[in-house]
Image (cartoon, rainbow, N blue to C red; front, side, top):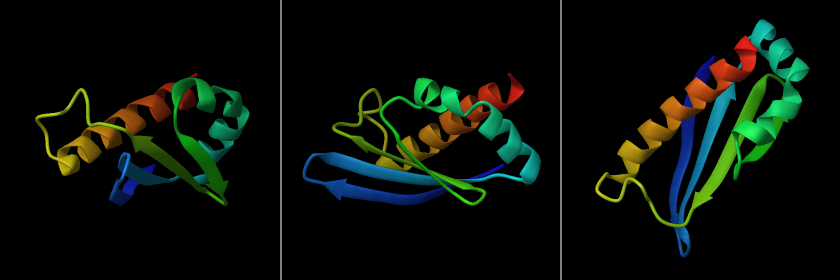
Length: 92
């Protein structure tokens, strides 16, 4: 599983983030078998699957609880959270 930050864009409402998650064939199969868990684990994210790449997009109105971090540091934190959540889904 490769999680790649694709976009961090300042908007009039906060920040838009987009990540791509490239899955190998085993991970993709496990994800497809547990697809109903995606909305539960990724609340607030727009989820799109294209071939073996899952795109996660989310708008953050403010950077809480990371107000003292840079947007780039927030992206790193979100990336780690995405990895953790995917491992939870795939391991079920």
